[in-house]
Length: 471
Image 1 (cartoon, rainbow, N blue to C red):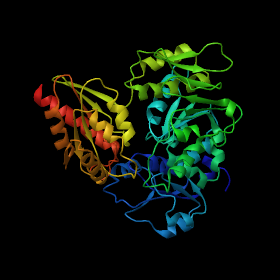
Image 2: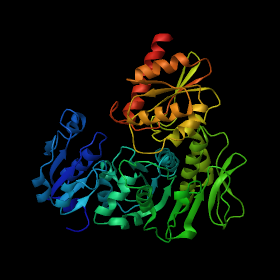
Image 3: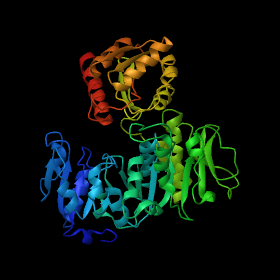
Image 4: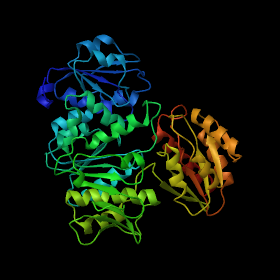
């Protein structure tokens, strides 16, 4: 079988490995089934755990193998569509005649403009802000990928001319190497961006070098007419050398990087883009944008620069960036209750992200943090603890390491608590008028929660319940 198209899938035996809870596996199964494939969905979790995703496919002739995987399904499949949550070293994948992912299938099907965003932190906000900006000139622009919207869910609606923004994780990028297109898949990207590279997912990768290499795939097949945006602020990003160096913009969260090439940074409060052919920098992010914190303003600068390089006018970029409201679970303001402000930053799953979040406030912060372990350093929590009014720890494997760190430094904390509700109550009791209760865990969510979004949703519900009681 050659490059995938909807017609090619007709009659093919397709196994979707990993149904998932966020719609990626369900979107792949639906797309393939509607194209006429004989689809089997298999997942180690049972039907009760996957009830919502199973229900989404109830109108299609899809076969389910749940609570286990059957080797015969993989041996007999024409195509195995791998979910990014499935490890690449799973033995069953060796039986697959051909491996694809929802992203690789989409890249083979769609030939219109694509802007791809990755990074350890900031990729969801950057991708969402970029999509927000693009929709002024391109109302049919779409956003998908790691942001929990599979691009296959809207593939059949596309004309082939509208711009697509893809947020891509390191897992999604690395998985491309298993597919027919391989690294050549990234030649489809008109603009690509890596917001930053910091220690993450070291429970999956053998080393930081392996993790950084997967991120670098986003520009591996950069064309001569494509742009790439890279951070100037972390050593892993600074070491990247894309194929078209003259089309690389180095982005800094502070001032313009000290080089003569294309760059972006901040001057007099403005986020600006410098291009060698321009006499003066292009102003893209206004000093009074709604973005909270230095890191969020940097995300807006990435989005604005990508939009400008794609062809959006600077005036449009400035206005749309100013209007961007932000997204859920990323310094999401939940309002005030009796003078205490509540902020949901559940997507902060590394310590550096927590430090950036805490630094976004001038008011005293009461932090809810901790959770399960991803094998990444927690050292930044030493500074976090000194910059917060109180820390309330959720139980978990990473919290065990965090407790040891704080104890060794003689820094105070409360907990670990067995539930988010208990940690929330502790933070509320500690907070005074004009202060902030911030959920910014710096750790993974597994064990106590389904995922980071469930964690943030539960926090939002606790704030709503607290408001109902006291107001």
